[in-house]
Every structure is written in structure tokens, then in C-alpha cells.
Amino acid sequence: MIRLRNLVKTFSTAKGAERALDGVSLEISKGERFGIIGRSGAGKTTLLRTINLLERPEQGSVEIDGSDLTRLDEPALALARRDIGMVFQNFGLLSRRTVAGNVALPLELAGHSRADIVPRVRSLLARVGLKDKEEAWPSQLSGGQKQRVGIARALATSPKLLLCDEATSALDPETTTQILELLRELNEELGLTIVFVTHEGDVVRRLADQVAVMEGGRIVEQGRVFDIFTRPLSKTARSFAAELGASPIPEALRFEAKSRSGLGAATLITLAVPDESAHEALVSELVRRFELNVDVVAGRIEHIQGRRWGSLSLLASGEPERMGAAIHFLRERRIGVEVLGHVAGDA
Ligand SMILES: Nc1ncnc2c1ncn2[C@@H]1O[C@H](COP(=O)(O)OP(=O)(O)OP(=O)(O)O)[C@@H](O)[C@H]1O
Image (cartoon, rainbow, N blue to C red; front, side, top):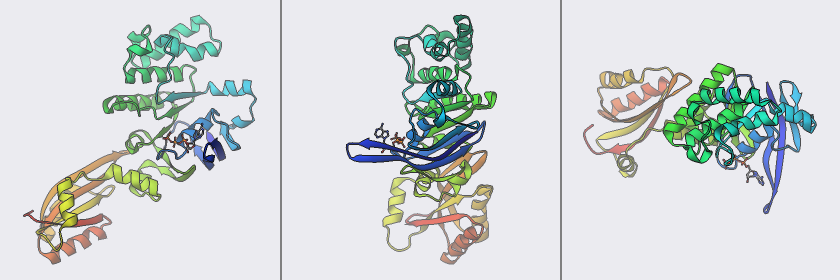
């Protein structure tokens, strides 16, 4: 449905020419929830804004449903943009219009009659959970409510595609969860394609099917979210995966394991929990088969696309030979094992 080909975009800045997009090509299917992730300055926002030509690339094409937007004249582009809604980090509401007035704006611009607009706005606001806020002013709303208005406004012209630029970055964790749920529901109910930009791995984990990872104006990796987070190849994807899947080992324990010389009574080990394996059984197996004492000190298991992934940190003690055999056994079963060091104590 969306086909971006070889996009190049350069900004002139005080420091000289800044290449924000350096040959980006991407295909996004209809109905997909597609995340674009990267660190600050990677070019995510610029890429998102080229999809509706808020940024015009110097090179490349932006094809949506077979039509290249870069070749359209202004009236045709304005028409094409009605099929693309956009949601912003800071909501972008007009403070001098009521909630209903904000949602009505795209419909007014598209030339709809008042008789069409009033019921449409009412039903959009009901859908995003703001039935009683029609006459409220943006300043009277919480951040989450403002973003709901932003989403209702973006959906006013019944677009097929929704672009979200850090839509939850200004929100607290609970409100983030609610907005992500709303976006997921809208995707499923309306078959809406959602392309979103974020610098948070957790937002990608929770919302996306597919993800593209950006570094320095390029896409360095792309694929299904589970695959990218569990087998990251690029530096950026590796760092997002590490943030997302790391066991929260107490700092004091990590420090002791790192700084202690020689062997202690217990070995601090982190296991990368593999896709399908029953990690609970692993611990009992280490105890039974290798006669180790095992104490689980930290763990973090996330669900990505319905599959488990994360890490488990253990303090294990026992015969050195058996410890070595246990580590060998785990690695043979393709479980990532990282020995962080040794600590005193009797695990
Ligand atoms: N309007 C502009 N004028 C000049 N330079 C710009 C402009 N917009 C973006 N850039 C530059 O292009 C590069 C990519 O910026 P972009 O905002 O797309 O990155 P990003 O990945 O979205 O980062 P962030 O998360 O910080 O917004 C940066 O170096 C930025 O400084």
C-alpha cells in the first residue's frame, strides 16, 4: 500500500547541509501497525512527514495505493491528504476552538456541510471516549484527553492511513497504555494502517507488527518486531533490545560480581530466555541434573506478538565441574548464557 523509494532529504543548517534521509526505501502493507524506531536525530520524524509530503524529498518517490504523491499538483495532493490522518506528540490543538471545533476542522476544510459535520464529530468523540467533552476547551483537558481529540481529528475524514509522531511521548505510563490500546482497537476495527515513530522500544513492542530501525538517515534493519528484538543485528536495535529485555539485577549485586576477584561462593548468571522454551523448567533442571543451588535474583519476561522473551538472572553455586557442565548444557540448548561474575554468600 505504501511504497517509499530511495528518499533523500537534506536540510541546510548553521553547521552546513544535514542529510536527514539518506536513501530510504520501505514498503508498508495495508492494515499494518508499523513502527519506526531510532535514537534522537536518526531521521524518524522527517521520514514520517515525507509520507504525507509535509516534507518534500529532493529525491525518491512516495507511492500510496499506486499513486506517487510527489507527482501530484497541490489540489490533487490536498485531496490525497484526506486519506492520511496525523497525530502529533504535542497534540497540535487550536486553543481558540472547542474540542468539537478542533475535530470539525478537517471536515470544514474538506467542504462538508454543518449537517454532516455535527453528527460525525459527535460519533468520533464518542468513539475516542470523550462524549461529554464536546464543548470543553483544550486547556481544560488532560494530556491523554488532548491526544484523544488529536486522534478524533485525525480520523475525521475517514483516512485509511494514520501517521503518529511520538503520539505517547508526552503522556504518563497509564495514559500511554490507554492511547496505545485505542490505536490498536482503531487499527483492528477500521483496518486502519498505522505508521508510528517512537524512541521507545516498549511502544514498538506493544503496538507494532513490523518495525524499521533508523540510524543516521538510513534504515539499518527491518522486520517483524519479535525477530528484531530477539535477534537484533544493528547497534541501535541491539541497544533497544538490551533496554527492553534486561533483568533488573540489583546494582550492589552487579557491582560485587564485577569487582570481586577470584571465585566466590556463587556465580551470577543471566540467561536469555528463548522464544518457546519453558524457562521455569530450566531452573529445576539445573538443580536436579547438576545438583546446583539456584536462587533467582531478577527476571524480566516480556510478551512480544504473543511470544515470551526476556532474561532471567540466577545465583548458582555447586561443584565447579558441574557448573561448567550446566553452562554447556544451556548453551547447547541455544540459551544465551552470560556469566557476570562471582559473589560471596550461600545461594
Ligand atoms: N526543519 C529542519 N531544519 C533543519 N534541520 C532539520 C530539520 N528537521 C530535521 N532536521 C535535522 O535532520 C535530522 C533528522 O531529524 P529528525 O527530527 O527527523 O530526527 P528524529 O529521529 O525524529 O529525532 P527526534 O526524535 O530527536 O525528533 C537531525 O539532524 C535534525 O537536526
